Every structure is written in C-alpha cells, then in structure tokens.
Length: 348
Image (tube, rainbow, N blue to C red; front, side):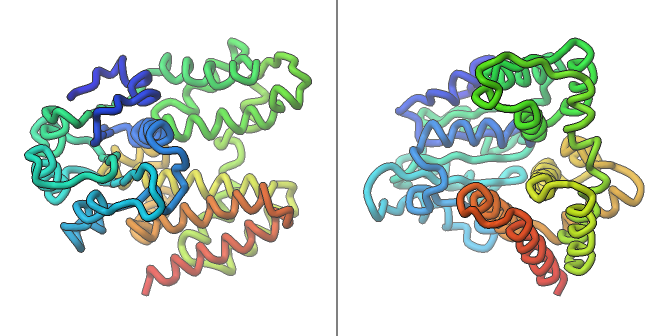
C-alpha cells in the first residue's frame, strides 16, 4: 500500500498490525531517518535490544544476497517480537527479490521489516513491490517547507512550555530547514539551554533570537570542527590538541560529542542521498571549497558498517556520560581517540 504524505505521522505512530514490511524512502534523508525511528519505536518495545532487532546494511546484501532472507526467517532466541532494520542508499536487487518471494508466499517472515532508503524513483522495483503488496507499506519522505519545520519545532518546544519569539522564529528557520534530524538536534539543544519544564519549575519560557545565536550549531561549529574533523580523518594527535583547546576555552565535552554525532548523521544523510553536491546540500554541509573537500574525505573513510560502528560508539559514550558518573571529559576524549583509530584503519 502507498501511504499518503498527510497520513504518514499518524500511520507511523500506530502502524497496522497486519503489515509486515515498511519501506521509508525519499530524498530528505533526515526525515526518512526520523520517521523510520518513530516507526521502529511503535513496532518494538526496545529498539536497542540486539536480541530483538537485527540490523543490515547495503554492504551486507552485496556481500551476501541471502542475508535479508536469513534475518527474516530467524526465530527469536528469547521469544517475543523481532524486527529487522535494513538501510539502503537506493534500489536493491537482493531486497526486491526477497520482497517478491515474500509476497508470493515463498519467503518466511518471522520478523517485521523496516527499510530505510534514499530517493527511489517510480520505476524502482523495490518501491513498486512495496506500494503494491498487501502486507507492505511505502512511505515517501520529501523535503519539508519552512512552515512544516516551524510546526515541528513548535510542537517539540510546546511539550516543554517553550515558544519562539517572532524574531527568533524568522532567524531559526533558515538554520534548520531541509533536514528533520538536524532540526531535532538543534531544538533539543535549545530546550537544554532554556531548561526543561521541571527545571524551570513548570513556568513557561520564551526563546529569543539571542538564545538561538548562542546555542545553535552555526554559532559554534568552527571551534568544534577543530576537534571532530581531525578525529574523523584519523589524526589522533590533532584531535587531542583540538579537544584540549576546546575544553580550555569553555566548550563542554557533551557539546563535542553532539558535534561528532551531528557530523556522523551528515555523512550518513549525504551517502543515502547519492553523495553528490545535491546530497551534501540536503545534509547541511558546505558544497564547495576546502570544507566540502574535507567532508568528502571523511565520507570516503566512513561508510557502511564502519559508520554504523562509529554511531554506536558515540551512543555508548553518551549513555556512559549520563549513567556512569565518570567525568564526561574523559569519556569523550577516549571516544575521539577510538574514532581516530578507526579512520586510520580505514586508510590502510
């Protein structure tokens, strides 16, 4: 079935129980990821449970075309629901072949499947099969307008009884327009900056233009890039020096961690959108000059499973900062060294 764009928010919040396969695709990679994550949370109790959720990439299917079929046919080791997540940059012959067999009743499905893909054209075999299948759903995600982004921001802020001043709204939209996932990260930083509803004693708050200038990535990216970029390129010494300067200048370790996570997301979004200049624009990174060349170098080093591993390392570091009680500076410093070593390995 084909889900109409206006129906997607409600659909992913309560997906029909009869459906087994969900294809989330489109040129707006941040929105694809955002909606896929919402869908996954609605389908499985714990999206981070490795026993309940299997993850596959495009590289996995290229090296083993039967990997998807094996993952979908596997029984749960501990009982309960299972989910398979597959991430693609575009059309995939192995995925389309499995989906065709599934619809014909020749491929068992002991789990539900969520596929994230890039911009699939109408002639895409995978898209056509998902749109026509009785137990499948196709959800197309296209770039949102400024008004859509504003509504999204206002909904998140309203949960914390925060609102945007008129001049702040006009300033904020150009910074976040074009990528839902990056927009969410900036909105969450604003909430932390102003204080959660509980921290403010249940009082309403107003976000000014100055608040946004103080908090948003555009205001502090240059200093953070001096830490994150060397790490992603394999320059451990450079990353360590940049990290030391960042801490001495008053930047937070958590801010560095967020910058690293944001750059990982940007590399991922650009790759999922085809990796060309237009993809870089959708990822929110420079398209020309030395910064663009630097991003392309990083993108060549961080692909497939290596990029997913970097994302997991950053997630584990974030969890450790929140739960372990260890100094955030030490946890993030160790993370940067591990990322740099990963890039060094990719260069060999």
